[in-house]
Length: 282
Image (cartoon, rainbow, N blue to C red):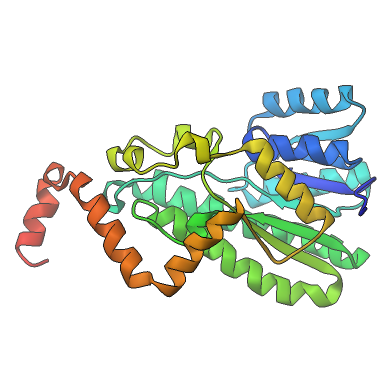
């Protein structure tokens, strides 16, 4: 069995959800875990839990939208543990709504910054250290929204498709130097993500049924599995592969079905200035 014992693993977005559960499992495997997120109180609570179970954990407050904070986190990891073996690039959030309703800064710019640029900046910060030891593994969190983009996911999917392309290019760039790059694409899951994605009637009606949702523990197990047995891409649960297949091979049908399903829930009359502009042919 592949062993992760004594590996140093950085987890971004470790204060809840996939990140917190992955941190516990990495620690259980014998990793020294660096817990990074904005909510230091939660990180300290998680670190205490890991230490009580006999593991090693270093909580570091960090906002992935701030490159200097990412650099400081990486330096803290090196100062305490001397190396970086695994990066689980997990921090992210989603704000799902009709494009014209999304706030240009709080929703659009913030999502691209956190979900895409944060992934890029954090990978960039650890790469020189992985290159110098000629080993390392970067696991980027994506989403099925980065494989097949549904309505209301315009910005979230833009960022996640970006993660997908970035990861593919970085894999080909870093493989000759001993650094692996993997991407995980989970389907719907029960996490805090749902609380922050916005209140939209269409999304409520077309959400993943609770009985089909993954748990944070399910995804965390897949992440640790990727660290043990690296592969390029992992879609979970396995049957979501069919969603990607339909989107790739029957795109026109997928477009028509989803457009017809979501259109009745667009409250276009709430934006009279836009409706008027459209009637003028703008």
